[in-house]
Structures are given as C-alpha cells and as structure tokens.
Length: 272
Length: 289
Image 1: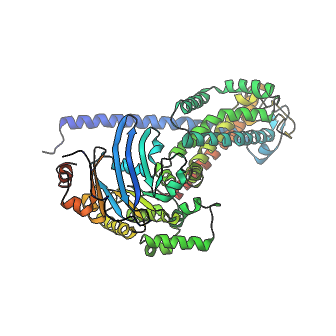
Image 2: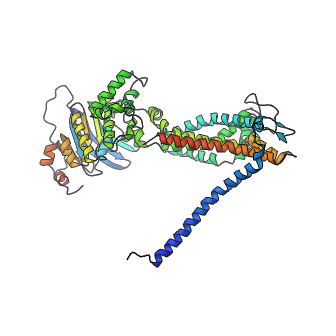
Image 3: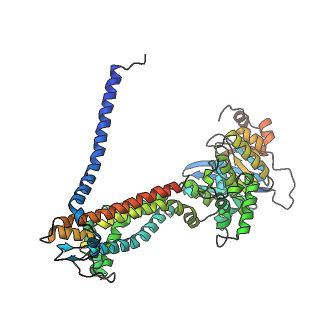
C-alpha cells in the first residue's frame, strides 16, 4: 500500500464558472501544542454535496471540521500550516474577518445546543446579531422564522407555540432547530459534528432526511462515527486515519470497492 | 442464604452511630442561631415599635429611637453597593469571559483572594489613609462607603464569576458559531442566564455590609448626631456603630435598648437574606435547561 491518499474525485466535471469545490484544503498540518493532529491534509469538498467523514476516534475528522470555521483557534494552543480555501478565499488569511467566516459556514454540534430562549428567538438570533440594530420589522421576522422552520421540517410541529422554550423540545426537534437557526444568515456551508449521535433511531432518521433535503442548496460536511449513516446519507465519503486522509471518493465506491486495505479493514469492522 | 450475618449487624451498628453523630453536629449548627434570636427577642422585643424605628435617640442616647442610625446604614450600604457592584460585575465579566488562562488573570485572581482575606480593621485603616486623608473626603459617608465597597468587592466578583461560569459553555459556542462577538454573546445569552446568581450574591453582600462596624467607625460613622446627613460629605450614624456605642460606651442605658438595636440589625440582615433566597428560588424556577 502506498502512503499517498487515494483521490478519485478530482478529474471529472468541468469548471463552469461556479466554484466546483466549496472547500479546497491544501497541505493542512495542525498541532495541538506539540501533538500533531493533522498531517498534510488535501481535500476538495464538492459544492452542494453531502460529504461524510469517517474514521476511528482521534483520527482528526472533528479537528478538520473545526478548522474549517476556525473554531479550533479558541483553544489558543492550536498551530496551523497550510491553507483552507473556501470558495477561493483562504480563510487563514490575516485580512479575513472571523464573523464573516462564521456567517458563511454554520456548524451543528453533537449535542443539540439551543439557546435557553424561545423557539422564535433561537431562529432569529443569528439574523439579529448580523443586523445593525439587532431588530428588524415584525412581519419580516415572522417570515424568516417560518421559512427556516419549514426548511427543517419543524414548522408544523411548533407553529402554534413559537414562544415555547427551545430547551423543552425533544432532542430531535432541538437538533432541527439548531440547523434552522443557521439558515436565516444564509450560510453556504454547513458543518455537522456527529449531529445524530445524541438522538434515538427515529430522531436520527428524521435528521438524516432533513440533511438530505438540504443538499444542493448547502454544501454539507458531516462527521460521523456511524458508518451506516455515512453510507446512507452522503454522496462522497472521506476516510481518515491517524490524522491523514486515506481515501476520498464517492460514498458507494468507498464502501463497495475501497482502494486501500485500511479502509476495507475499517469499514468491515476489523478495527475502530 | 440471605440472612443477616454477625458482620452485617456490626457494620450496620457502626454506620448508624456515625449517622447519628453527623446529625447531632448539624443540629448544633442551628443552635446558636436559635439562641441568639431567642435572646434578642426575649430581651429586646419590648422596645421595638414604630416610634423606636422612626425617632431620634434622646436623654444622652439612653432613650428614644434609632432613626438616624437606621437612615445612615441604608445610606452607607446603598452607596457602597452603587460603587462595588458595577466595578465587581465588570471585573468578573472580564475575568470569566475575556481573560485567558495566563499569568495576568492568575495574578488578579490571587489579588482578589487576598483582598477577601484582609481583616476589616485593616480595611478601616486603609480607608482612613486613602479616602479620608489622601483624597480629602474627610470622615464622611463617601469615605465610609468607599471603604465598605472595597471590602465587598471580592465577594461581588467571586459571586458574579461563579454564576457566569455556571452558564454552560455550549450556549457560548452556539453563539460564537453563528458569528456573534463576545459582547453580543455576553449581552444576549450569558448575562440573562447568570443574572439570578449575580443578584443573589449581591443581596447576600448587602446583608454582610449592613453589620460591618470597623470599616465605618473611623471613616464616616458618628457616635451621635442630632440631625440627618444632607450630603455624602457629611458624617452619619449607623446601626452597627450605634449598637456598639449603646452597649459599651454610654452609661445608664436600659438593658432592653441594646438588645432592641441588635434585634433590628439582625432582622434587617435576615429579611435581606430571605429576599435573596426567595429571589433565587423564583429565578431558578424560571430557567430550564
């Protein structure tokens, strides 16, 4: 087996003026203090697709995800080499404004984290902080709330009680709400860090369905521990191991005809 | 097979013994409170009346009411809080929301802990040196309140920091990930959720300040004044000092009077503490996560 990552997705599809790749990662190395967590990661994430990342715990998939919206930096002891280009702009350029990055790139967490406020205020939070006076007119707000909640298939359940505390919703509904509140600021990329791992099978199915609905309009990068989920709910799949990208290809190919022995071993459950 | 063995019986007996011991210790805690309150009510209850609360002392402080002292204490405590709460809350917000874990924040935390450990009489002397003499406020309400404020500052900071830290990190992460600035996060999410804890801490602080004697006796509290203060640069009487005076400094005071003054002082503290606890219970019920 060669050490070069297998990348079968770079040659097809012509450039058509639009950015073909939403996220273009070039030679990314990342250290937590002295521990190197990512080694020379090169990844091109296709626009408008769902790309899943799989790999055993500690393989760097969450770390990679968290460097795409630069939330890793909060830890202070993180050091980075290389570039991540989002729609052609290097987000590690010093001139880049973090707030703009966060606006364009939304993130959904493992554990649903709605704010302890009403459903309406949760949906409007992002919208309000990105508007000058933190307020827009009522009618516009109502429309934003309805659109966002409809998109995440939650509207019918909560429309009669938008003032209810978001923390009283079921976990599945909370997670949908967490996705909904990203939408009013019109992000282009959604990062999801094991978005279903706190949910029961029914909730998982519902959220997966929602994620599937969102593809096309949003570029979605989803980290998961659940190989079946990656297989069902993504179009391309990345397999990482020990901070390195092992394989990145169409999901179907990765699961049916893995190019590397490590990938085959992992998806067959021989380690991980 | 499942019968009690001799060893089981012995272990159970020992555990019962310890349990009883701990219970007795706990009950011993309540005892002083009950004895103090009981004594005060029994010996001083007779002097309490509206007239006692709202008239001046007469006959060389051996009779009459406590109005100037009551009024002065309210003044001193309010002004002290007006100074220490904004300062303390701001410092706590900086420390828990902005400052990283570095030598600077550790130094400040150390300073706060040390400030909290300074005896009140030392605060009093500092107050004399700094506010009365150096800043030239003289012995005045302002100097006394500033001294009280410095003394209460660490507790306000610690209480505020604790309630800020109790707000789950997940809320902040949610905000930051939507592009909120630190301040937007604090303003919209952290403070609204921490406010109950902050207020509780502040009210508890009020009650402590009410009873302090040493810090005010050299800086602004007077032995006896036949009139109410008109500005913050006047001296004033205060409950705690008045109690000290009638109990030890003035001859011929009837027995019940000092007990009455003490009863009023303790009641003020108890009432404020109860409000604080009630408030906390109410606000806890409001928030759910």
